[in-house]
Image: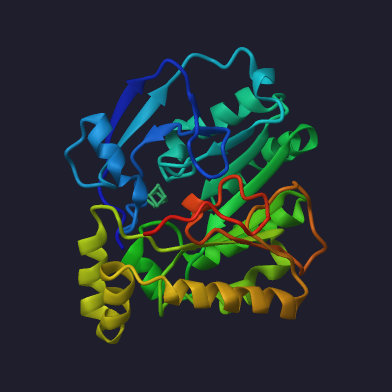
Length: 307
Ligand code: SF4
């Protein structure tokens, strides 16, 4: 996918730290509104509604201005997720540096900082990340849901999978905890084991999350599958039309069996925070992640009738 032309604006916010409702709790922090990666399946595209933007998702970005965080210790021990509805290391970060500014403001906070990205621009900040890692819990996660660069290019305008994996290795080798976030898992397309094999020696965690098509992008994805993977249409209809969870339930079992085969832990919640021996990442089952919160690895989820 070509990087779309981006209309850039600026917005003032009262605070950059937002309490999160996500399965991990804590705070979400998004130094930008919008995301140039323009992923076709972007769940964050709902943000348009709240920001007054009518342009296509991926074609606008507002740079946030916020008052400096004067009490970073308030976040000590709290989970702070950077990049829940944007990628803080999107290409415009190179010019505006807001994610770096944010991390500088949080560097002595003692927070449990998680950076989610699809970029290798994070390597620009290795000096800062290394410093943060000495005083905080720091984790950097890359989304990798395919090893097929053509499929990746159909789906997003972020850097190649190879560049993401190379960045992951460099950060891991610097002693920083890393995640290979296999998300979203596309039924019949995402090969979990191939990605796991490729990443297992350079990450502490492998997260698994299913493709969710409840958003306005359902038609975009279904049309894409019909055009490029027509043989998968019956499967997609079954999962996203009839809400049959059988595919992901079977995949969950397969992932658990894979974890045992490779000697890795298989959990539905990543707590406690830890590094693991190289080659044995903990595999975290975030399928139907809205049911995970509070499960604390008991395996008993807050199940709903429908996905
Ligand atoms: S990187 Fe994340 S926030 Fe950005 S477009 Fe893709 S899914 Fe959305």
